[in-house]
Length: 254
Image (cartoon, rainbow, N blue to C red; front, side, top):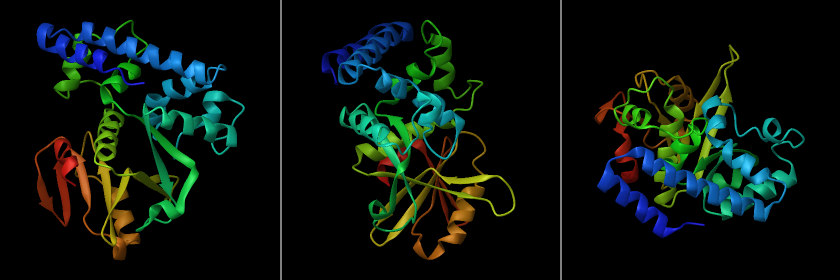
């Protein structure tokens, strides 16, 4: 589905005009082309609905992608839904992160095919899709996004950025969730990667990076399986209390 001529045009418009509205118009055309192709694959429109729901589902920070709330009559683990997700994945427009039921080396052996999160393969399209309720994503929103001043929880955007980087490096995507023993709180590790015979948990932060309870609880529970642990944030690199705090642009070097 990738159109190299359109991607080239987007880059050229940014360079020549510095006008994000014109760029956003092209990105909306790309999204519309994707959704037209989805309807050719599945005439019911379900693929397009699943694709459009990705930003809102990530923003809700649930245990996984909630297909029943999008399509009403289908549960996440339904074979029809799994077939649709497979078709989306084959289109190369999305990446799928599966829940690792027993996080460790060989996570594919314990992945839960019925629990997953979806990410767009291109974070630029993700931003346009996230703000599709407006006629266009105007320059003010883009400028605030670039300067980290937008009044919104940007964690889900940074999470998609990290997913795109890890996928580009050849990683399969996995995450892990666990319930708290003392409350209804859900602990979640955003991404897990394996290095040799150990695993590396990754927590993505857009705000207060000093608070990382999920990472702490996970590392206490699986201490003998942990190699390095990472908090991805928007600040400079530092190493503190056996945690690597890395800026987003360093993710490809993991």
